[in-house]
Image (tube, rainbow, N blue to C red; front, side, top):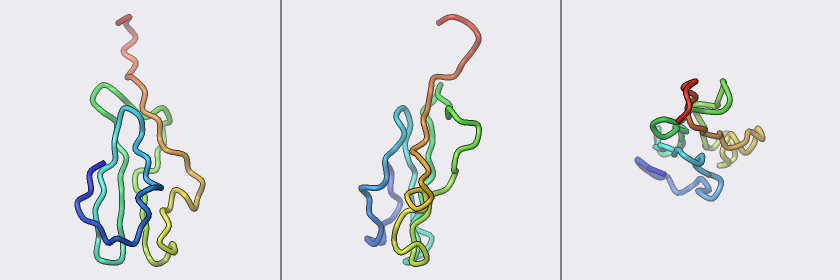
Length: 85
């Protein structure tokens, strides 16, 4: 997990990077942190639509948006090429 900055207000224990991937996180200002999940090279998200942005701020009560909405941690799987390995 890579943090570009940290306000210290948001619980890092709620941020679980996807297996075969990671999170890039930063701070918009002193009142909001955000993270974006990514898959490693040769991997892709299992689901077509993945929440591309998770935020934590005063409006969410300093809880991460994906926790409040019940969204699971995205899953990264090996890309399908159609050919045997």
